[in-house]
Image 1 (spheres, rainbow, N blue to C red):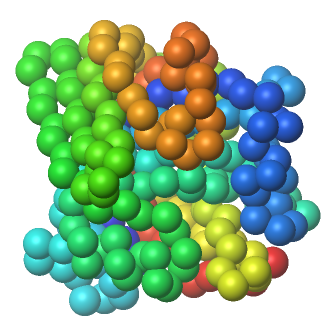
Image 2 (spheres, one colour):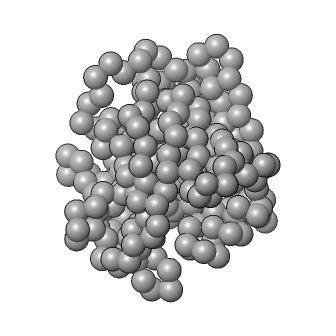
Length: 224
């Protein structure tokens, strides 16, 4: 499956590894940087997603998405992400992802806008709880030389998930992110708390980045 991830923001907070260790699939542990685990709030535009050689899927292949994710590593030293939640506009995508790979997609109403150096994302989950998120960033200068932390948080080449008690690694390939520094100008988020990490967004983010995006390709699942 290939797709473009466009107009993506990376807002991250360091957390105690003990808080997220129980959230990892069997055989997977938190991936640490400078002794901390990290949780990310990542909104973006999914564009032209398609399967195999079919090409982009009309309508269902382009939509807004916001994910809350953790960072993981397995015994084979494969570094990836573990999704705690993913908001998406397309109900068919939500149902298909949940049924096939137990990836926790939620159906949501979402919006994205950009004006000058400001970008703004809003989402409201279409469940009785109506969990919501608002994020606004001011995008700054290009990152000429990414730091080790920049790469740790953005250069992730797969995901870990668990299906019926069995853990899987799903590889992902992409080129270098064209990163820019950014500053949070507004944040009112309930998604991170709803994912099992209350209180995190009340603290100052440890990293805020923006990218115009890259093309990514997911490979076939591999059992751990």
